[in-house]
Image (cartoon, rainbow, N blue to C red; front, side):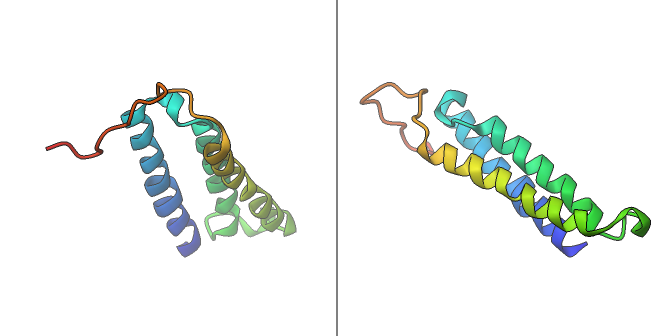
Length: 102
């Protein structure tokens, strides 16, 4: 259960938490492809369950590794889209301001 735990902790909570905080701070439109990232992470997390002992061995097979490998592309493609798509939420010439206000 180490691999799914680390993915649930780091990818599920930390990454999605940071993306959610950015969307709350700068507006949802300023973080393009956020819903695609959430979907990609959820699919990836679900494909890790057959790799654990929680999944019956009779239902396993080589498809479990293939599914997990292909599912890794979802968050990567969404992250690339988030970095390359134009941000629509901010007005031109307006700074986002400090993240931590005193």
